[in-house]
Length: 299
Image 1 (tube, rainbow, N blue to C red):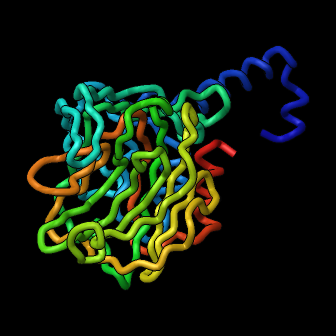
Image 2 (image 1 turned 135 degrees about the horizontal axis):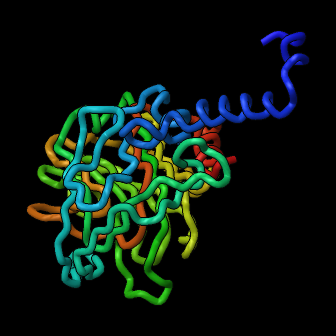
């Protein structure tokens, strides 16, 4: 509309026209029955080079599938009661799995992505988990390297009984330890590990990070570049750079929210919220880790 024509329109009528344009332009996304567009997922994660799989874990309640937005690696939502597990030092869990729990990633919001937009939801688990069928694409080779990423919030307390709690893992032990894991130690420290092909306690290489921050959302990244294992927490390196040999898993499913340090069933369940889980081929550089952390916080 040209400036001369605008001058000829009475101010009241012009205001009505502009209001109608605003309503028509901003509300049209509500007319479609589609999944909410999320800024963090679509702008920060999905375009990332090397992305192998991405599970936001924001499905509606009663869903049975955890959808991989990258495609090809949907998982099954499962749950079971876990007794106290002295053999693997795992905590007891009642087998609860709550989908559509309030989201913990501030930057992962429903359109239009402003300060008033609701966050997408997440998985709250204490004995619930996701099982993703084995695929070599989720287990990069040593030469390729890998990165694991997740946003988590722990829901146990510092005085809880000592226990390992797994966020995600592909670990298997047949013929020697192989695969990777992102977890918390029994003395409440963040940690990452890889199987180096050995058996027993020498078959695992661990990068141990700092103490857990309770009642706080944490962005976790574990990366392996073919020679060194590193753990990042909230955009900063949190463990020593740990030289490691790594043998990719050859058969085990990927688990989110529980571990499988030995056959035949899962062990060491996580207790808390998990959201925006990703696996990449290759080690993400520090600047990318920082970007993901800042964008996830809505910065």
